[in-house]
Length: 382
Image 1 (cartoon, helix red, strand yellow):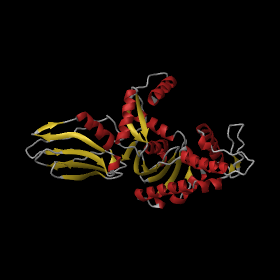
Image 2 (tube, helix red, strand yellow):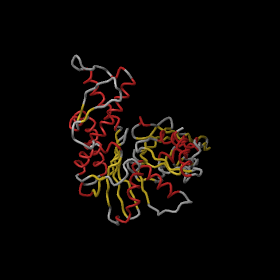
Image 3 (cartoon, helix red, strand yellow):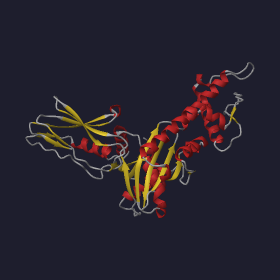
Image 4 (cartoon, helix red, strand yellow):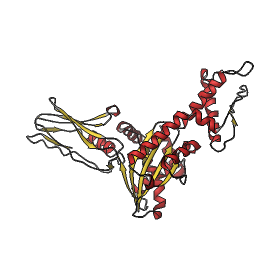
């Protein structure tokens, strides 16, 4: 339904039919979630040229128009994308006409968590009012709590540009709240959220293996990155001044649009090479009923797209499947097996798995089939 509406808006704006697109998705999306996106786009009548990670789209929007400032010397940039529901941080390396993603870190916290923390604080203060003041528990009424969240979000935005104490204004003439807050109080109330933000930044710094003196720039995007405390934490961890050269609300969509133009044969744009990464460890599991094994296929942050051959030698029928290092994130069965020297393949499912798990940023651009050998030794190569 969302893709159908977006398609209608695009067609009305462009005054032409929209058939192809590039879709951005959060870095932490797993295979199942990516396949759901692709299925939804297919139902909406859209041909997806590529699934691109939001962090990669942001980096592309940054580097595509700044190519003149890059040389053969690596230019390392940290991107902080802090939105309403998620925090995604990435490190990438720019050279002339080239972008290489180095690492990513994320946490599913965002502006809504700040809103909830502040709303809960005001709920407690309202319940503890002295006699004679307006006393109410907004959580007891869904409509009242929604109004409180809306007022808190507005207050949060206002506190991002001033350090003075501001009143909480709720759009209801019958409620005299009489509450106010300033930046320092908000920082104390949201201390646990800000701690998780700092932990995510430090995790990226560790996994990217970059030294602080190798970081050339720090770019902030996303609505929640406007919170002063977030900017201060980012500058504290990465030891460099933060900038906001990109449109903080449209950086991801602009990067996806540039990628779509690069892949569309009817549009001519300057080529810009992109090397993405796999954000999870990928293993291949095999089982013949008597024994089993686990073979590492791709390490975390391995470059992508990339093809690797894995050989399994077995004299009896066996099954194979792909899995992440964390089994809770999903196991993806191929459905291919060797039986009586005859190969049975579910090639369509396998193609989708390969395109979306091992090559999440490329969809249906290049078909890739496993090389399956049904020789007497029953060797299956994937």
